[in-house]
Length: 89
Image 1 (cartoon, rainbow, N blue to C red):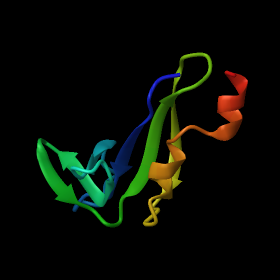
Image 2 (cartoon, one colour):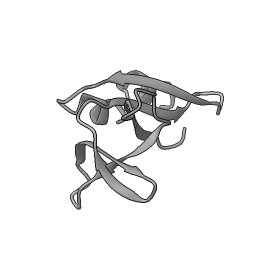
Image 3 (tube, rainbow, N blue to C red):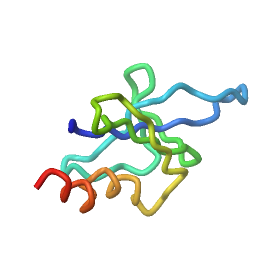
C-alpha cells in the first residue's frame, strides 16, 4: 500500500470548482489549514474541501473526501488504519 496524499478543492472567483490542488505542510510536517499550491504559488482558501488520494488493496488509485475539516482530522485519517494494519500482520 502506497503513501496517501492530501489535496484541496475550492470555489474560484467565477464560482467554478477548482481542480485538486496539493495541500501545504509546515517545516514540522504539520498540515497548514486551508493552504494549497496554485500555479506554483501558495494560496489560502479557508473554504476548501480536503480530499485524500490513496491506493486501495488492489493497487488502484482512489479518492476519499474529508470535507472542510478544520480540526485536521483529514491529516490524521491518512495515517495507518488499525484494521488495515491487522490485514498485513
